[in-house]
Length: 247
View (cartoon, rainbow, N blue to C red):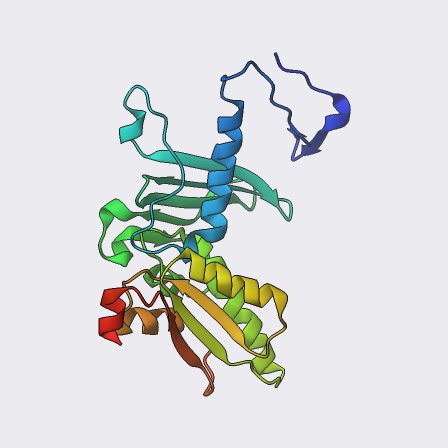
């Protein structure tokens, strides 16, 4: 049964939209799965730039009729600044396969970018850009198969552009303290320190498990505006024999 209240409607471009939606039904009918799917989608968009090569995504595909062997697909349609957008991506529990963003600037569907990892490994084969994005291949090069392009693009633009603004205004730059962490506990500890204390430094925590290499460190640092006072640290358990041998 579907119930619509006139007070819950608004119109954009001649099309009626709902301000809010309520889902109700019997126990075990799938209501919670709808919320879990939305959470999984939002979590990927907001956080996948922090994921590492051994990350297993925190969602479970539908188990019946062979769906557990197929990619899971997410689709979002939204309006921003009076322009309609369509964003989608598909993934397994271990890697992102496709990603697309379209928009309707004049009522006609236009591609912003598309991504198909099955065409790789060359990034120029994987990605197609139609909209005038700022240095998109710089973002693509730093986007692994564990990371959504828009998540990486947002992270790079948000952190780098904020620091560029400080440089342009002649303000003193806080040095970067890059902390490469063994796991989630170490990252959480760093985040806790940042939330409790106002520090005169810019702390950047990266979860790497034991896959710390010079190339990885330089790649992570390359997307930030660096200063002469930057520092790099490793944070791991002393009982990790492999890490102890490296140091």
